[in-house]
Image (cartoon, rainbow, N blue to C red; front, top):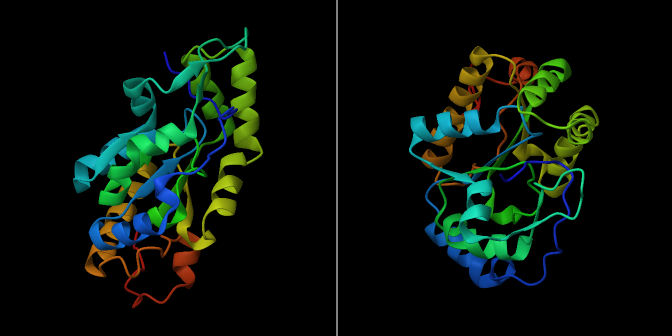
Length: 229
């Protein structure tokens, strides 16, 4: 089993074709659909959001856990308290998904986001959950106390939200709550509308963030990127 954890021990990114000018030119020429990251602490609802969004939009659900298993790029951890944790080679991972990112239309589902090249990402959604609810979800998954506490600390300290804001333009990053099916449905509808606007504008406005409800209340409703609901 490939365990999800916020405590990552990845190898450093060396040189990748994704960082060269050729990749930048290709992404601009070929991407007709946006790439969206759905990230967050394990148990917050990333995969539920990703699968639902993929079903509604036709974009591809790119589950990084599946990529790691398929290409065997995760090595077993030496941690006796958590032997299921895999150490992922980020360089090899990027090589595996290079063509997918250049083509666009990817919903990237993983508990980390800062390794993906910003020029190939159009929106970063950080899914959050109330602490008690998250604790219960992780307990139900059978997480041991050490792993459970690491992930709870990650959520409480907003580690992934800060990672996203440091790695990408802040206007690209949106925080979404995921404590009920109604919230999930609302989140997906808002992202779906954002995708339609991105495609309508041929990517020119693709990096505009969907807004939180409080921000929407202050926004001019004539703005083409204004998302209702």
